[in-house]
Length: 120
Image (cartoon, rainbow, N blue to C red; front, side, top):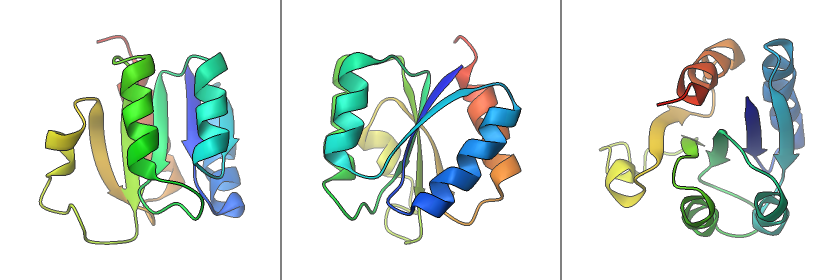
């Protein structure tokens, strides 16, 4: 399974990446929109972990690009805000499969990635 993590906080992305590496996932990290799009243009990912609050660029633009490149790629959104806590993110992005707090334990996030990376 191949995973793209888009998270502005490098230390947090590295923590998630280490957990996914232990599961055997191929993981690539990006800190913002431009870097994420560059990876999406040249690589395929089964799951994208996308923080809704990026320091560089727009998470919505990235999510739109993910859907454009491969509608089967699942997106797990993470955030530290309560915006979209009503579930409306799922009506905006058809490939959204989860909406989690940024503080979700890495082992739980890894389990969700493993679940959603399975063929559907």
